[in-house]
Length: 185
Ligand code: IMP
Ligand code: MG
Image (cartoon, rainbow, N blue to C red; front, side, top):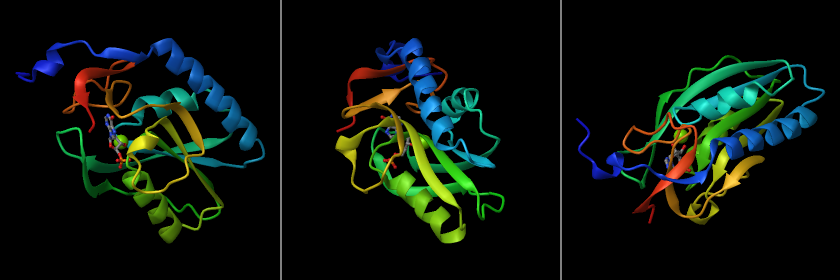
């Protein structure tokens, strides 16, 4: 049984389904243009949060691509970064000389993205390496990281929906919202 009272409420909408889908199409135009000459793009989605974003994004890409998944965890059950990355699954094929695009749901403190990009740089000699994130929360950044493709910027709210969870729930929502009073700070 769900006992958290927040989960009984409907989140306030920040970005509607229509806004998200149209922004994803714009990002795809940019990505298609940037990778127009790519022989093969490897799209690596960071689970679990990026699952909805990546599946909608790749439908608009017209570059020959393969999709891979890694699973990294950094958050516990609360709305604050635990400050530690738990690599749950980093199984990847050989990425030598490949164009690689990492797809994240949100770059918050930057710890997760930073960890993974450094990991790829250290263990894989990719041809190119870029990062796409549906959301960017620059105000929370503690680790510098360059995000090449950003869907939307958000301020210091703990957001849910469209892949992002609160206590494991809400990922299925087609929109992005927040619970008033449940701020990230
Ligand atoms: P970072 O390492 O602090 O940049 O955050 C990494 C992960 O924390 C993201 O990929 C999300 O899974 C989760 N996260 C950060 N901010 C939020 C949020 O506002 N809502 C839900 N999950 C978040
Ligand atoms: Mg995530």
